[in-house]
Length: 100
Image (tube, rainbow, N blue to C red; front, side):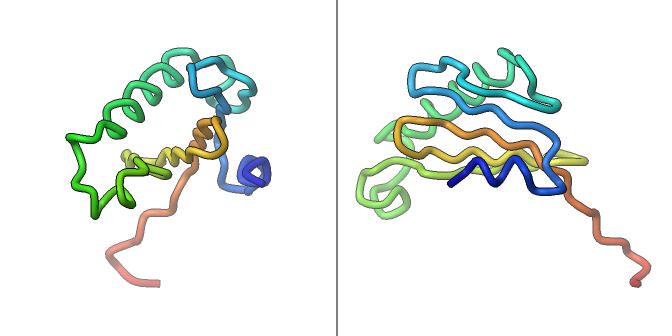
């Protein structure tokens, strides 16, 4: 299902890892990037703590399922699904101030 995300034209890289932080697959800018994998793993672990988010924000205590980190020229989407963590780096177009 999420393997199609890596084929989107604006995808710059991806990592798929297990729930214990082992990289299963990586490509593009994230090819063999252990540092990104470990950083995102720690972010997911921190964001999944029950005392961090109110129950109404985290889906009745189920924890997070998706998060995005927006940076200057790209964003990283993290999706948790079936004991896998999918990390996708995508570029986005800045809106110009001058109009079309």
